[in-house]
Length: 239
Image (cartoon, rainbow, N blue to C red; front, side):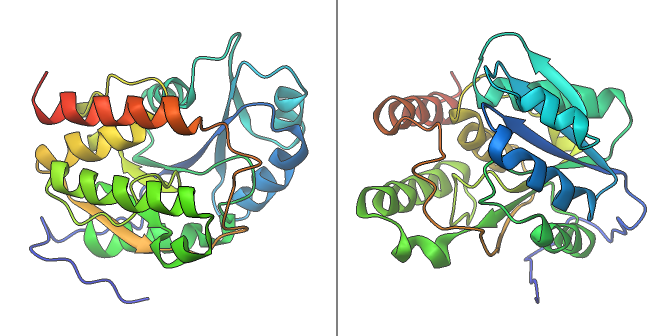
Protein backbone atom coordinates (compact mmCIF):
# COMPACT_ATOMS: atom_id res chain seq x y z
CA UNK A 1 0.00 0.00 0.00
CA UNK A 2 1.44 3.35 -1.05
CA UNK A 3 0.31 6.46 0.81
CA UNK A 4 0.80 9.98 -0.50
CA UNK A 5 -0.05 12.94 1.71
CA UNK A 6 0.15 16.56 0.66
CA UNK A 7 2.22 18.84 2.90
CA UNK A 8 3.06 16.41 5.73
CA UNK A 9 3.35 18.21 9.04
CA UNK A 10 6.74 16.84 10.03
CA UNK A 11 9.28 14.11 9.62
CA UNK A 12 8.04 11.48 12.00
CA UNK A 13 8.99 8.04 13.23
CA UNK A 14 6.22 6.36 15.17
CA UNK A 15 7.90 2.97 15.41
CA UNK A 16 8.25 3.23 19.19
CA UNK A 17 4.80 4.56 19.96
CA UNK A 18 2.61 2.74 22.48
CA UNK A 19 -0.68 2.03 20.78
CA UNK A 20 -3.71 0.41 22.41
CA UNK A 21 -6.71 -1.12 20.70
CA UNK A 22 -10.12 0.09 21.86
CA UNK A 23 -13.28 -1.97 21.34
CA UNK A 24 -16.59 -0.41 22.41
CA UNK A 25 -19.06 -3.24 22.99
CA UNK A 26 -22.77 -3.62 23.63
CA UNK A 27 -24.25 -7.12 24.00
CA UNK A 28 -21.42 -8.55 21.91
CA UNK A 29 -20.70 -11.82 23.71
CA UNK A 30 -21.00 -13.92 20.51
CA UNK A 31 -18.40 -12.04 18.48
CA UNK A 32 -16.21 -10.20 20.97
CA UNK A 33 -13.89 -13.08 21.86
CA UNK A 34 -12.72 -13.59 18.28
CA UNK A 35 -12.18 -9.86 17.84
CA UNK A 36 -10.09 -9.60 21.01
CA UNK A 37 -7.97 -12.63 20.15
CA UNK A 38 -7.31 -11.37 16.64
CA UNK A 39 -6.49 -7.91 17.93
CA UNK A 40 -4.04 -9.23 20.50
CA UNK A 41 -2.10 -10.81 17.64
CA UNK A 42 -1.44 -7.26 16.42
CA UNK A 43 -1.35 -5.11 19.58
CA UNK A 44 -0.41 -6.04 23.13
CA UNK A 45 -2.93 -3.78 24.87
CA UNK A 46 -6.64 -4.24 24.17
CA UNK A 47 -9.23 -2.14 26.01
CA UNK A 48 -12.90 -3.16 25.93
CA UNK A 49 -15.57 -0.73 27.06
CA UNK A 50 -18.73 -2.62 27.95
CA UNK A 51 -21.38 0.05 27.49
CA UNK A 52 -24.08 -1.35 29.76
CA UNK A 53 -24.47 -4.81 28.22
CA UNK A 54 -27.07 -7.22 29.58
CA UNK A 55 -25.26 -10.33 28.34
CA UNK A 56 -21.80 -11.82 29.07
CA UNK A 57 -19.81 -9.18 27.19
CA UNK A 58 -17.76 -8.25 30.29
CA UNK A 59 -17.00 -11.89 31.11
CA UNK A 60 -15.85 -12.55 27.55
CA UNK A 61 -13.58 -9.50 27.65
CA UNK A 62 -11.95 -10.64 30.89
CA UNK A 63 -11.60 -14.25 29.73
CA UNK A 64 -9.72 -13.14 26.62
CA UNK A 65 -7.22 -10.93 28.39
CA UNK A 66 -8.60 -7.48 27.61
CA UNK A 67 -8.57 -4.55 30.00
CA UNK A 68 -12.24 -4.07 30.88
CA UNK A 69 -13.90 -0.70 31.45
CA UNK A 70 -17.62 -0.89 32.14
CA UNK A 71 -20.60 1.45 32.17
CA UNK A 72 -23.42 0.26 34.40
CA UNK A 73 -25.96 1.63 31.93
CA UNK A 74 -25.82 2.22 28.19
CA UNK A 75 -24.56 5.72 27.34
CA UNK A 76 -23.80 5.34 23.63
CA UNK A 77 -20.76 4.62 21.51
CA UNK A 78 -19.39 8.12 21.83
CA UNK A 79 -19.33 7.98 25.61
CA UNK A 80 -17.69 4.55 25.48
CA UNK A 81 -14.94 6.00 23.28
CA UNK A 82 -14.46 8.94 25.64
CA UNK A 83 -14.05 6.53 28.55
CA UNK A 84 -11.40 4.59 26.65
CA UNK A 85 -9.64 7.74 25.48
CA UNK A 86 -9.36 9.02 29.04
CA UNK A 87 -7.92 5.70 30.17
CA UNK A 88 -5.40 5.69 27.32
CA UNK A 89 -4.16 9.19 28.16
CA UNK A 90 -3.94 8.39 31.87
CA UNK A 91 -1.83 5.33 31.09
CA UNK A 92 0.63 6.99 28.72
CA UNK A 93 -0.45 5.60 25.34
CA UNK A 94 0.59 7.57 22.27
CA UNK A 95 -2.55 6.66 20.36
CA UNK A 96 -5.38 4.18 20.01
CA UNK A 97 -6.89 2.12 17.24
CA UNK A 98 -10.64 1.67 17.51
CA UNK A 99 -12.58 -1.22 16.01
CA UNK A 100 -16.08 -2.58 16.38
CA UNK A 101 -16.98 -5.66 18.41
CA UNK A 102 -19.14 -7.35 15.76
CA UNK A 103 -16.32 -8.61 13.52
CA UNK A 104 -16.80 -6.25 10.59
CA UNK A 105 -13.38 -4.72 11.22
CA UNK A 106 -10.60 -7.23 10.71
CA UNK A 107 -7.80 -7.08 13.29
CA UNK A 108 -5.46 -8.24 10.52
CA UNK A 109 -5.96 -4.80 8.92
CA UNK A 110 -4.47 -3.02 11.96
CA UNK A 111 -0.94 -2.99 10.45
CA UNK A 112 -2.28 -0.78 7.62
CA UNK A 113 -3.24 1.90 10.13
CA UNK A 114 0.06 1.57 11.97
CA UNK A 115 2.01 1.89 8.74
CA UNK A 116 -0.01 4.93 7.69
CA UNK A 117 0.74 6.54 11.05
CA UNK A 118 4.48 5.90 10.68
CA UNK A 119 4.57 7.18 7.11
CA UNK A 120 2.42 10.29 7.50
CA UNK A 121 2.21 11.26 11.21
CA UNK A 122 -1.52 11.82 10.64
CA UNK A 123 -3.49 12.34 13.84
CA UNK A 124 -6.72 10.76 12.59
CA UNK A 125 -6.57 7.84 10.17
CA UNK A 126 -9.85 6.32 9.02
CA UNK A 127 -10.11 2.82 7.59
CA UNK A 128 -12.31 3.64 4.62
CA UNK A 129 -14.96 1.39 3.07
CA UNK A 130 -15.94 3.51 0.07
CA UNK A 131 -14.71 0.82 -2.33
CA UNK A 132 -17.33 -1.46 -0.74
CA UNK A 133 -20.26 0.99 -0.81
CA UNK A 134 -21.77 -0.54 -3.95
CA UNK A 135 -22.19 -3.87 -2.13
CA UNK A 136 -24.27 -2.25 0.61
CA UNK A 137 -28.05 -2.06 0.59
CA UNK A 138 -29.31 1.12 -1.08
CA UNK A 139 -30.30 3.11 2.00
CA UNK A 140 -27.02 2.36 3.75
CA UNK A 141 -24.93 3.14 0.67
CA UNK A 142 -26.66 6.46 0.12
CA UNK A 143 -26.38 7.43 3.78
CA UNK A 144 -22.64 6.70 3.78
CA UNK A 145 -22.03 8.58 0.53
CA UNK A 146 -24.02 11.64 1.54
CA UNK A 147 -22.54 11.81 5.04
CA UNK A 148 -19.00 11.43 3.72
CA UNK A 149 -19.50 14.24 1.20
CA UNK A 150 -21.07 16.63 3.71
CA UNK A 151 -18.55 15.96 6.46
CA UNK A 152 -15.64 16.34 4.03
CA UNK A 153 -17.02 19.76 3.10
CA UNK A 154 -17.63 20.77 6.72
CA UNK A 155 -14.19 19.63 7.88
CA UNK A 156 -12.15 20.78 4.89
CA UNK A 157 -10.74 17.27 4.50
CA UNK A 158 -10.86 14.59 1.83
CA UNK A 159 -12.54 11.86 3.89
CA UNK A 160 -14.38 9.29 1.79
CA UNK A 161 -15.98 7.36 4.67
CA UNK A 162 -17.04 9.38 7.68
CA UNK A 163 -18.89 6.57 9.47
CA UNK A 164 -16.19 3.93 9.69
CA UNK A 165 -15.30 3.13 13.28
CA UNK A 166 -11.98 1.51 12.34
CA UNK A 167 -9.59 4.37 13.13
CA UNK A 168 -6.32 5.57 14.57
CA UNK A 169 -6.47 8.53 16.97
CA UNK A 170 -3.27 10.18 18.19
CA UNK A 171 -2.89 11.15 21.84
CA UNK A 172 -2.51 14.77 20.73
CA UNK A 173 -5.87 14.67 18.97
CA UNK A 174 -7.57 12.95 21.91
CA UNK A 175 -6.09 15.44 24.36
CA UNK A 176 -6.96 18.60 22.46
CA UNK A 177 -10.12 17.86 20.48
CA UNK A 178 -13.11 17.62 22.81
CA UNK A 179 -16.25 16.32 21.06
CA UNK A 180 -19.56 16.97 22.76
CA UNK A 181 -21.57 14.05 21.34
CA UNK A 182 -22.00 10.81 23.26
CA UNK A 183 -23.56 8.63 20.56
CA UNK A 184 -22.59 7.68 17.03
CA UNK A 185 -22.32 11.37 16.13
CA UNK A 186 -19.01 11.62 18.00
CA UNK A 187 -17.13 9.99 15.13
CA UNK A 188 -18.44 12.58 12.67
CA UNK A 189 -17.89 15.46 15.09
CA UNK A 190 -14.26 14.44 15.61
CA UNK A 191 -13.58 14.65 11.88
CA UNK A 192 -15.04 18.16 11.65
CA UNK A 193 -13.21 19.41 14.75
CA UNK A 194 -9.94 17.79 13.68
CA UNK A 195 -10.07 19.13 10.14
CA UNK A 196 -11.05 22.64 11.18
CA UNK A 197 -8.43 22.54 13.92
CA UNK A 198 -5.60 21.89 11.48
CA UNK A 199 -5.01 18.24 12.32
CA UNK A 200 -4.01 15.90 9.55
CA UNK A 201 -6.88 13.56 8.63
CA UNK A 202 -6.30 10.63 6.31
CA UNK A 203 -8.48 7.88 4.84
CA UNK A 204 -6.98 4.59 3.70
CA UNK A 205 -8.83 1.61 2.17
CA UNK A 206 -9.40 -1.47 4.31
CA UNK A 207 -10.95 -4.88 3.79
CA UNK A 208 -13.87 -6.05 5.91
CA UNK A 209 -15.09 -9.19 7.61
CA UNK A 210 -18.49 -8.45 6.06
CA UNK A 211 -19.73 -5.43 4.15
CA UNK A 212 -23.23 -4.62 5.40
CA UNK A 213 -23.49 -4.75 9.17
CA UNK A 214 -27.20 -3.98 9.40
CA UNK A 215 -28.03 -6.97 11.59
CA UNK A 216 -25.20 -6.36 14.06
CA UNK A 217 -25.25 -2.56 14.18
CA UNK A 218 -26.84 -0.56 17.00
CA UNK A 219 -27.10 2.43 14.65
CA UNK A 220 -30.64 3.85 14.41
CA UNK A 221 -30.95 5.19 10.85
CA UNK A 222 -33.35 8.06 11.47
CA UNK A 223 -32.48 9.21 15.00
CA UNK A 224 -28.73 8.82 14.69
CA UNK A 225 -28.55 10.37 11.22
CA UNK A 226 -30.44 13.43 12.47
CA UNK A 227 -28.15 13.68 15.49
CA UNK A 228 -25.08 13.49 13.24
CA UNK A 229 -26.46 16.21 10.98
CA UNK A 230 -27.18 18.46 13.96
CA UNK A 231 -23.77 17.90 15.55
CA UNK A 232 -21.97 18.58 12.26
CA UNK A 233 -23.95 21.79 11.68
CA UNK A 234 -23.42 22.98 15.25
CA UNK A 235 -19.69 22.22 15.13
CA UNK A 236 -19.27 23.89 11.75
CA UNK A 237 -20.98 27.05 12.99
CA UNK A 238 -18.88 27.04 16.17
CA UNK A 239 -21.82 26.59 18.54
